Length: 114
Length: 145
Figure 1 (spheres, chains in turn cyan, blue):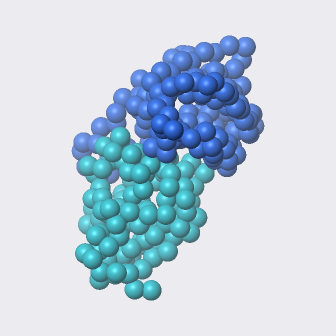
Figure 2 (cartoon, chains in turn red, cyan):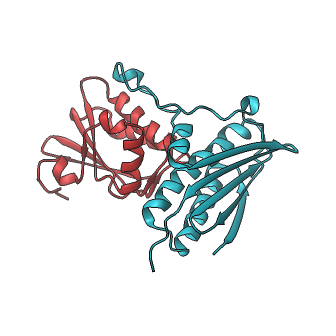
Figure 3 (cartoon, one colour):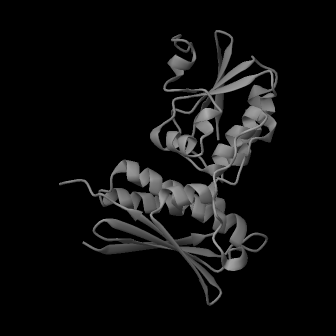
């Protein structure tokens, strides 16, 4: 799995460059999130726009990634594709995270600088 | 219209992904609406993950066999494995997880059976001749031609 990270206006944006966050991927995702978000801005946005499928292991790994940030920092989610969105809504995890349709919305309309 | 297709794979996480993808491709080839395929994939993945993580837990991974049967307005997926039976041969209730309480207490698992029950129209489980036979059924509205 590859995660890429950029800072946009003081928010850390972590993009998931994979089509699935599934059982085969969940532990690595959690570890990669830990190393990417260790000591960083208080707000992290996870860009899920490339992720077409997530299972409950992947969902658990995103919950774990939020817990790893601790109470003072937060994890928001952006760019949920239809199946990913469905899993969050069915499990009511959409009430736990702030969800944004697009990364631009999540970062206040400021486009990512490369 | 009635047709069936099947696949089998070793019960590892990576093989499971390949197997699930192949079922999804077959459903796509048959013109099942994408939204429904997404829902089938969620339930199927949870059921197959259970086989990998629980039925074959601690043993060399055996085989998972999947047979799909597509009828007029129904898709049945039979998942067969030779692993340990589901405890008490009783399907878990799959109740929704509570999300109340502090963040550190949020559940990181235990969603599988809830998702399977939410997304299927019928579930049958039978343990026979040392094998688990789990059948998941889904109502399918085919696209009008």
